[in-house]
Image (cartoon, rainbow, N blue to C red; front, side):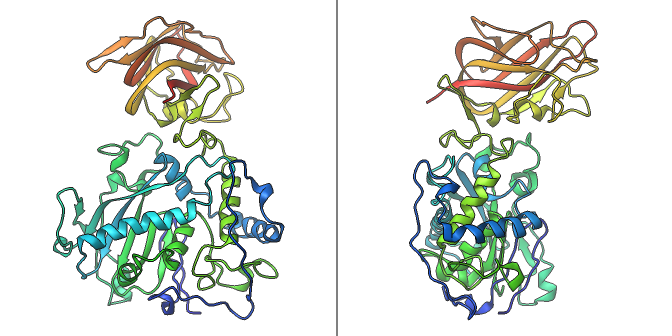
Length: 469
């Protein structure tokens, strides 16, 4: 089978044989005549223990010998990460590198197609091993096109980007348009996922997570955490199909799943079923693909700093607390009056629970050598009703100590006000210090700390409890 590798840095990509371009053709090679079984749905308490025995050895082999060895899940921008960061949503920009016109109905169909193809994967995570989401809301938030007149019957609420760069692939393949449309880097998660404090212009809803990249005269498909690329005609010709082979295959790469071109890349003895991740082997997601996806999630969720809200029932990147409030700190943008150059304000809400006030096994926030009154602040993308904070103070036995005192303030829409009836305001080391207060509705919360003498102040974790809706 014709194959090409290597599309884009920091991605997982594949180009499928051009013979598969124009339809959902599937073939099974002579050494892979396999039988498929019915897809097994997850129940609310399903875990890896429920994986059928006949799949176990091959799934584990691929995880150990391919995914771990190749580091295909190391980048914290997989579709898993994107869904959590988007609180159960995914946003696309369609990158239309084509001279073909696109009707309004085709654009609407493309949006529905992306939602359908993504949920063909994620529906198999529902009810499985702490996955907190049900249907993933997939939206097209813009079109990048060199010639906007190709978008017929443009609507007033459609966002169009017309900037272009040069596609280097066009110099190798003259049939590919040299002008490559781009959306602004400022709203791209791919460009900013490593910065926990990055704020998208216009808010989280205005960002885009991936491109659907349709290219004229492109042969095959490519996929990764940046999106999916394929032929423009393939996109238009398959847009109303239920399961779309190349599109689903390339989405699989976005979850970190591998290709299986060569024999040594496959489990010894082959696969027990067909798999869509072996190009041309299946035209739909199979049991093996489902359990490979589930296995990957079960391994990744062990990193609690990466997925702190894996068991919160789909409320996004926040933790559920025992008192029926929820910790909304993980969804906040953290800022401060000053941060020591070697510390990081993002430590305030990274979800790490310290073992002591001098726990340096994770990032910490400190403001040495500043003294006197310093502040830390959370900004939320929507109004919350808050009634409690929990602070774990940083104390290193050197220049940083617990504060002499502190106040909790909220933004009243015009300025900062002290919370009322604050009870707690503790400064004990080696524990969370809980403060409760009269509930307030706000989009911002702040702690103002007064240092002890010549010592500076610091915090290892700051949780904020909001009333659960």
